[in-house]
Length: 234
Image (cartoon, rainbow, N blue to C red; front, side):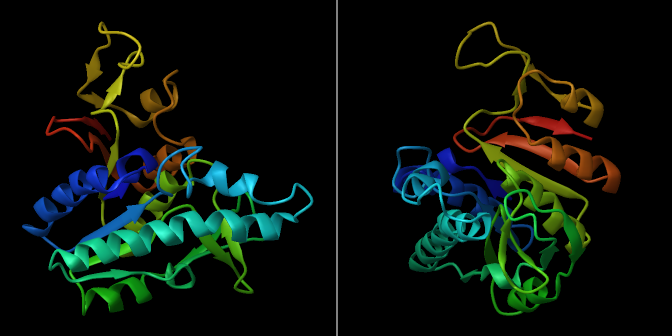
């Protein structure tokens, strides 16, 4: 289950996310993939963190700076789940199993390993992983580009041999036009990967959809604040 920044922006918002996690726990253990909390100017959002760094920082330094948003988000979610009596663990970024090249701001994936996540699941029911972050061969922090948490979700699914992911956002599916702007927006129940890639409303990162298409991973786009059916991309 992947949750976007608006789904995690406040304690009240996160309670809705945890409700979905608890529903998932009725069937299996849950890998919870999280974005940075909120959007600019929220204090821990990616763009807010970027304003704290000089433009003169190297790409490697900027990757370290923005990675703090997802790391903090993972630790916050794990803490609140623990306080609610759920066996949760915040996965360190260097144990994510996603190894990339040295394109720090838009890294290309070289290899995947689910070993550390599988080990964490031996002791915990929910593993919370920061999306968007990976590591280079030498251990440096790298990032997967804007919207990279969606990409992370399908990478985690692939490394664990899971053929479906739930991606939660502040809208309850894919619409023909932005439902926040028009009451005439129509939600799609199902889309093919290619139809999703050709949508003018970019709800999902293209890298996420392309990888899901290649690996035949179904994406169920759902609303964090809704019990609706969402949109299946398959």
